[in-house]
Length: 237
Image (cartoon, rainbow, N blue to C red; front, side):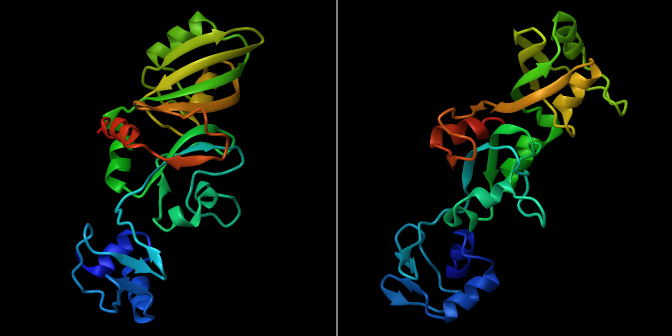
């Protein structure tokens, strides 16, 4: 593998950025300064340092975040704080992006990665990857709503949703529920409850495919996926 490609894949910028960095003598390979980006490198056996920092070669990165309220699911925005802004620089340099979106006021499981192929597989409609949410609903959610969700409800724009699984945890003037959907229309869960005359007060995503949110993560916290969790996520492909 070329040195410039390895450094770019490791999050040190574009090929152009890496070329400029190499010219400054910031890169050492096996104890020697190297400035030629075309130099062939063995990612496993060669020892590479950038400004004295050891480069552990990784092409892709996979992060689980417990998304907080008030942050948008994007990589950059001129006005709003983005989920990527919450990440440490050591992770941001890999240029991860959120897999799908959670509304600004929705919390819970969000995957960030730079693996475009996996992201596409998880979001492709034909894959029907399930997303499970916990919610508090204004109004009494009842068995009639459960049956309506099982059939699919008509949203405000006339779209008929695919069947969804609705489970009632508790019901009163404010109901606590879990709902599983297999698509990701704009504000879908909120609009589905609106279609049956109710309003979502709180919404939290707790599962995507076979991967569940680590409840030890506080709002705004994140960590890289374990190998076992990554395997669960990739099993949805």
